[in-house]
Length: 374
Image 1 (tube, rainbow, N blue to C red):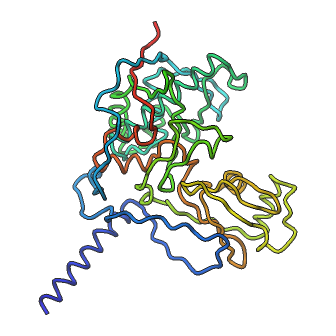
Image 2 (cartoon, rainbow, N blue to C red):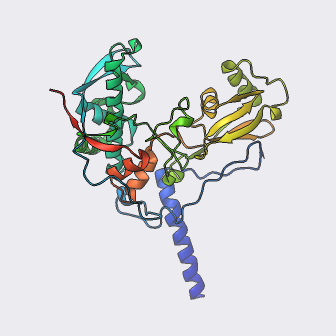
Image 3 (cartoon, rainbow, N blue to C red):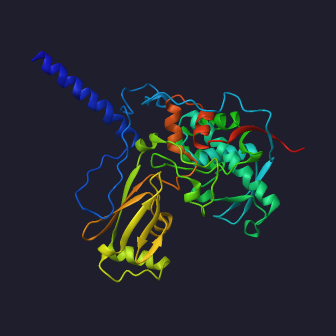
């Protein structure tokens, strides 16, 4: 009896250690029925060990690695032999007001990190985000200097302060952080300032450092998202920590009529006059799992077209016919190209440095010092 009691206690304890962190961080615990599946769901591979096998005193140490971080080509120090001409300020077109803001580079990097990544993320992930945001901004700054877009009114790129997209001010960040304002803003600034002198470059130019919230376990090749353009440093990268992200898998339910109206509003030539079970046909996926083509109403659309028309979180999805409508089971959040923010946080919590995180998601790109113009 004592042995049975001990075994029961161990089993219950192990279960609590798995479930409690999931509840605390907000991971959904969902149940599902058995509807008819139009396209067979692609199950996510399981990590070799539980992500949480023991509690930790501090959030940044809460995850336990399923395996040791891989060896990455980026070293501890940037290649200082490579120097990229930087900018002293960026001009931002605020979509919410139409106003063009002039923001010093350091302030932009801080505000970009605050807008784009939760301050609760690991510091090394925040650093990686800071480098990516700085690089992305510098790339667009260069483009606008060479070939200005009249629609930007002299700005380098667009932001949306009202919806906290791309950049927010310190005041907005503090208001958003609430009681944790001092702690979180100090953390964001420390991370951003420590890497403000670094950008990612490829062949001497700042890269298009795309990023997104959650991949579907493997990031997507840019060639499958943006007009077939192949980008050497935006190729598929392993991001298995994303399987554990909150809302990695979501569902969005529509009636047949809703799907029909939404699709026809964008693609009026679709033939959706027949039975709903004939609307969706053959589907093709990229090696990363994202839908690259799907037959809809006699036409072939890209998965990102369906994502836009139905306002899905990503274009990695399955279509389920419930008999009353369609349920779209969606994996990940965002276009899937470049750095995954939740994947970066997962890597950082396993001990990866920001250099290693960047090397994983932007393979072939290198860190370079920024030289400020005189």
